[in-house]
Amino acid sequence: MKRQTKNWIVFTLALYTTMFILIPPKRGPKVAPFGFYLGFIHASILNYFTVKIYKLWKYPGDILLKGIPIFTCLSWVPIANIFAYYFPYRKNSIFKAGYILMFASATTAVQHIHGFIGMWESKKWRTMYTFPLAVFTHTIMTLFLPLFNLKNIRENH
Image 1 (tube, rainbow, N blue to C red):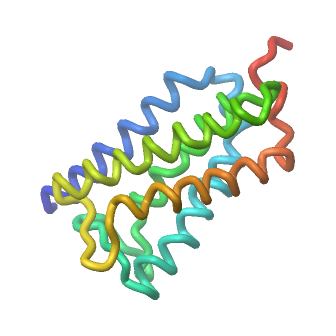
Image 2 (image 1 turned 135 degrees about the vertical axis):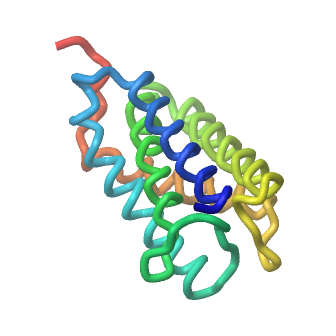
Image 3 (image 1 turned 180 degrees about the vertical axis):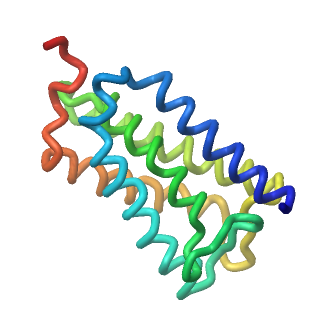
C-alpha cells in the first residue's frame, strides 16, 4: 500500500473519530442522512466533474472508483454532519454567513495542507480558487438544511 493511501485512510478515520466525539451518539443517526447526501453524494458529483471530466486536480494515493476518489468523498460525510449539527439555526444571517465562511476557510486550509504534503495535486487549479468554491458548496448545503429538519437537533428532548 502506498504511503499516500495510508495518509488518506488515516485522514478519513481522523475525521470520523472527530465526528463521533463532537456529535452525541443519540443525535448521530438523525444527522447521518444529511452527511450522506450533502457529504458523500455531493462530493461524488463535484469530484466526478473536477477530477474525472475536467481533470482540474487529483488526489495521489486515493482509491478511485470509476474515476472518483473514494476516501475524499467518504471524508466529506463527517464534515457535512458536523456542519449540520452545529449550524446556527436560530441565529441571524450574519452568524450563518460567518459559519459558512468559517467552514470555507477550513476547507481551503486543509486543501493547502494536502497540497503541501502531496495528498492533492493540480496544475490547473490554485488553492485560492478553493475558497469561493467552498463558499458555494457550503451555501448549497445550507440551502438544503431545511429538508432534513435538523433545527432542533441540539435541544434536549
